[in-house]
Image (cartoon, rainbow, N blue to C red; front, side):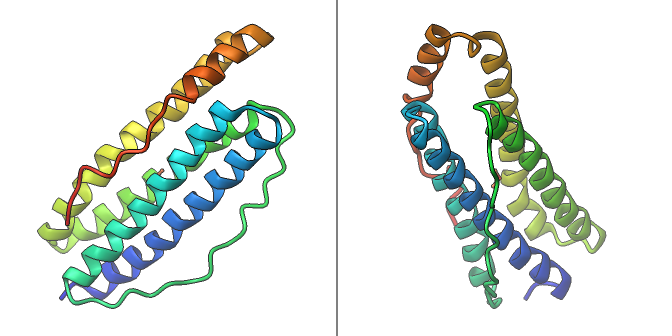
Amino acid sequence: MLDKTIVKLLNEQINKELFSAYLYLEMADYYADNNLDGYENWFYVQTQEERDHAMLIRQYLLNNGEKVQLAQIAAPGMDYTDFRGPLVKSLEHEQYVTASINNIYSEASKINDYRTLQFLDWFVQEQGEEEKNADDNIKKFDLFGGDPKGLYMLNSEMKTRVYAPPSLVL
Ligand code: FEO
């Protein structure tokens, strides 16, 4: 059994992770529409990672005998007007997700829920990586994305990203 507040927050986090998957899928589609298949690939891999995050939380709740409650996933509905837009939005979004994970961590800490804290440690580290990746993408775009050759090279680099299952196994 887990504390009711923690269960509620973890269920809400499942929704946030699935929304993240939607948000990144929309970004992948935006780049696909603009023939940038490398950026499309990068965000499609990101979509898969976000789905994994949601499934890890689902499994954690189930492993602890708690009910998973799925809620409606909002449409991202972003309307990007330039190639930099999704990169900036992804950093903002990861900062939002980090704050959300930190809030659950804080609540678990208050009630000495060591099991949930240990589970969340992986997410804390993951958020550090996600923010760094998003920040790197903006920096690289600002350095090299301004001319067609540079954008071509960046797009080729983004195409090399390969999906890997999460290192956390429950
Ligand atoms: Fe699941 Fe990008 O945080």
